[in-house]
Length: 244
Image (cartoon, rainbow, N blue to C red; front, side):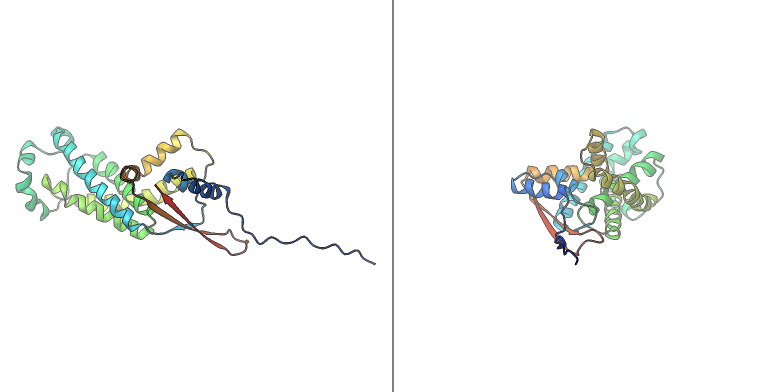
C-alpha cells in the first residue's frame, strides 16, 4: 500500500523584477527621477512614443543650434571657417547659400567626429522617446538637414557630406555604441561617476530636456510594457510612471 503525498501548489505568479517594484514604491511616495526610473526598466520592454516630448526636444535642439552658431560667430576664422566678410553679409547671402549646396572644406574633426557625434545624439534622443530605429534615423536626418539649411546658411552653403555623414554614421554609432552602453549601465545595481558621465555624454539633449521640464513643471509619462521571460506563464504588465 503506497503513501500518497500531495504535490505542492504550483505558483502562476510572474515575479516582477525588484528594481521595478522599487520604482513603484518610489512613485507612490512622490519620488520621480527620470534617471532612476529608466534604470529600473528590464531588458524586455517596449516604450510608447512620446511625441510631445520629442517636439520639446526639437525646440531645445534648434535653440542649441542657434547658440552654437552664436559661439562660432565670435570665434576666429581659423576655427569657424567664416571670414569677416561672410559674417558681415550673412543675411544677404542666406538665399544664395540655400540654393547652392556644396562640399565644404571644414576641418576633419568637425566633419567626421563632431557631426557623427551629434547625429548619434539626435538618434538616441528619438530612441529614448520610444521611437523605432528607422524613425530615429529619419529624425536624425531631419535635424541635420534643418541645421544645414537653417542657421548655418547665414554663413556658408549647406554641406552635402554633412547631410549624409551626420545621420548615417551618427545612427550607426547610436545603435551599436550608445544604446548598448546605456543598456549596460541601466542594468547595474549601482552607478559609478563614470556611468553617470557616459549617460550624459550619450544623450546630452536629454539632460537639457529633463532640466527644462523640471524648471517648468512639465510632467512626462513613461509607459512600459513588460513581458515575462520565456518559459514563464504569459503575462503582460503595463507600467506607467508620472515623472516630475
